Amino acid sequence: MRILIVDDNPDIRVLLVSILQRADYEVIEAADGVTVAQWVEETDPDLIVLDLLMPEMDGWETLEQLKSDPSSKDIPVIISSALSEQEDLDKAREMGAIDFIPKPWTSADLLDRIQKAVATRQ
Image 1 (cartoon, rainbow, N blue to C red):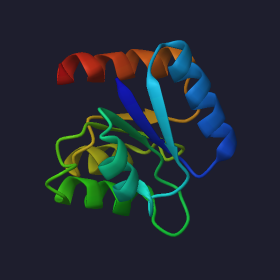
Image 2: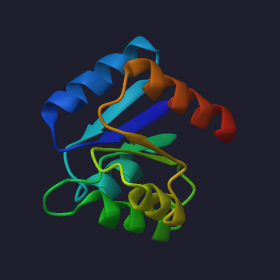
Image 3: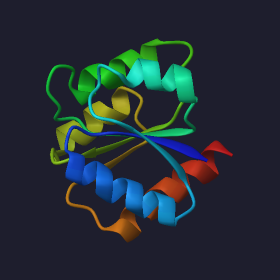
Image 4: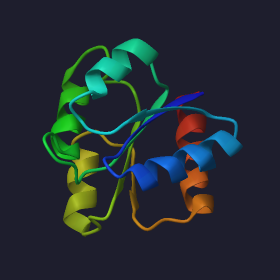
């Protein structure tokens, strides 16, 4: 299982990589939304964990791009964001995200939601 994490915060990426690799996932990192299309094409991830608050191209634009591209529209996306209002959760789901994990999250909660997403996809 290959997971692409997209977050501009290097500390969050390091933490995610550590948690996911310990759980035997293959992890690819992207520091911004601009490079996501390239990473998706090159690595064909099974799941994307996407932050919303990023410079240049934010997570909303990135999610819209992913879901409008035939080559990536079926890849499940889990939003991981400090935004946690109900309207953000609703908007993310309307745009095609399968789950929304508000930051800060626990590693147990994160892994549980990823495992549910993986099970759903299989």
